Amino acid sequence: MHTVSFNISDNWDEHPELHRQVEWRTASGVERCIMFETVVGAHHWTVRLNDFPDEPCFSVLIDGSEIIHFDDWPKFWGTMPPLPKKD
Image 1 (cartoon, rainbow, N blue to C red):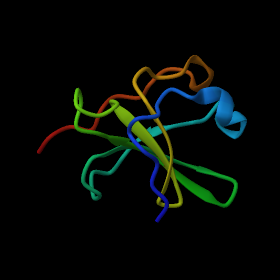
Image 2: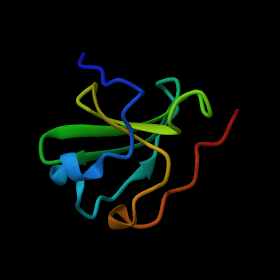
Image 3: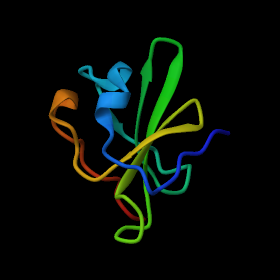
């Protein structure tokens, strides 16, 4: 699994492949801290909730590898789905 330093976040310009409308859905809750998920082509994308405020709020993982950390939901993804419900 590839990891990205938490010292770098919101660097969207370095990831043009993420700049697209994506149909995110609320995650099933099976994986701890995974809030949202989708499939793009043959790839499984997830958004993980981090230990905010010590870390950026969210991280995008593609097929389990960290791609980017971010704080605010990007407009190009549309509306953020609801967070998973706690049991």
